[in-house]
Image 1: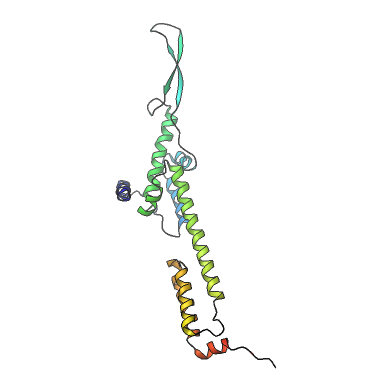
Image 2: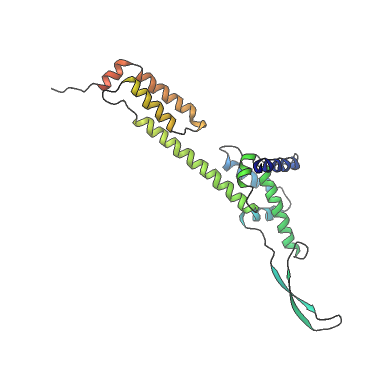
Length: 216
């Protein structure tokens, strides 16, 4: 239910963006997306503040002191504490807060529902920006690790001495099932698998590989 609500909110943000939308983040294009998002921000009047919000946490309201007259017409003052809010802070701070809201909108308009459901708990633009970066870097590392493991397993896979074809096939497909092969590498995996099967399907080649070589 929470995911459905989050997706509905994200779709509303997307619609609110209208035609003036930043580039969408797609699989494998994080570096390009990040660069294009920054160029998109550069087209905004308050682009410097928006860039600042991506790198820094937002301003937090706090308790502040102010001098007030003890009574009307008196020259004597006392110090009172008050809680800051949007209306009583300086214009510079209000501009920063406005830029923070714009930064959040730009980021959320440039991501899909799956990514949004992962980062929507982040409290501000800076944390969302960092979370997306961690997410995409993690995807890249995981893909590289899976690819490395895939080629390593294929490279060292051979038939065992005295092994039957049935056992060979069984081990081979078990290896494929245990490897969580990403879809983007499926074509390469299929080619390698076809080559292995073609060699294994040749009984003479398999027997020749299994027979010990006698050296008189």
